[in-house]
Image (cartoon, rainbow, N blue to C red; front, side, top):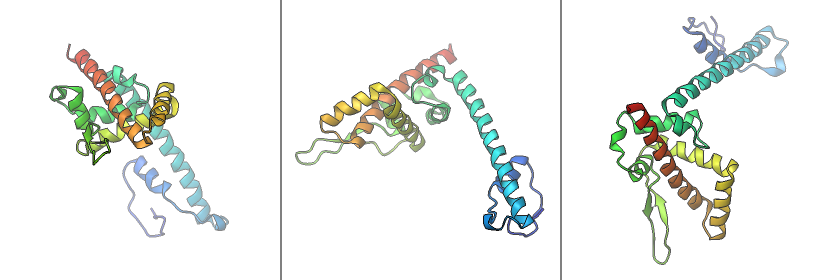
Length: 193
């Protein structure tokens, strides 16, 4: 087998690895009359389609797994299979350690901490905790602000009160953490009973 640089390389194992390598080919599109460049373009196109098909299949499997493991959490608007699985990983194998929704908020890094100075009275998010859990909540909040009418109305109301968009997102993350915690506890209760 010849790599895209033209140097010999031993054949790789699984087909997905080959697809991954092939999808990184960089053909010279201005020189497609050259058979090597045309072959690179063809192989790259096929590999890209194969990886897309594989990614969609894995996403469907992940969706089925998260829907069976955490149906209440999966039903929350704005949480897709990626974000639900990230939150499930964030709480780990011992969800009993989450005594309250405040503990879950600290774990995901969305607990408000006073950051006032002088005459200003404001809060910031807790910087500790699981960054992937925080990222999952952030993605869900952005989706909600874009597509959920309740979130849009909330953001509009808070904007008229003088809050900035980062402060609105901080508040939304905290509200979402409360909702997710309740759903996760309900899912855990159904699994254990």
